[in-house]
Length: 194
Image 1 (cartoon, rainbow, N blue to C red):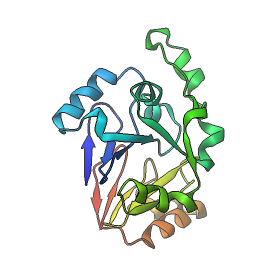
Image 2: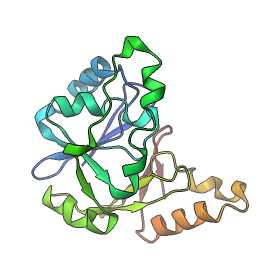
Image 3: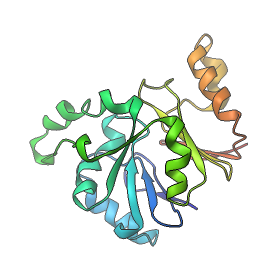
Image 4: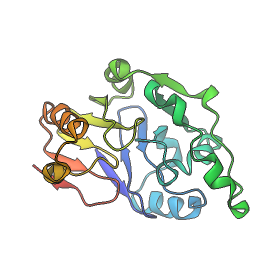
């Protein structure tokens, strides 16, 4: 089950599991009140969320993670993201009104893409994560066996030809297509059906 939470400029997805669910991407720091309203509209409780993951560490995808950690939601990191977690700190610290607290990756669950299927299965979610670095080096996509692909800011499949010689983008989409997605969920656009 995937639920879309709209409360800012970045789509946040909740994937429910048998035990706990996982939250994929958050909006900008300072959007927690709007996040709470979106949870209520989607009938999701904080207690339903076990983990939060960012598809990549740009400010508009991970701004609430440290606040969610304080609420007991654990950070899930893919090992290819470790060097990028603090990329947005300087950006957020420019705005003192945000009172941004940097993420503490010390308490995170760190897994590799190869371990992701087993990890997700422990939550009652069938799927896996793959490294899709065409947008940024730390980007990952979440591919669910039910046919959903949550791809963050990966340029849409139907625009691949416009990128001419971007072999990395072609490879990312080939890797995703090997999983036979039925619907692709983007961070800044509506979902697209295959």
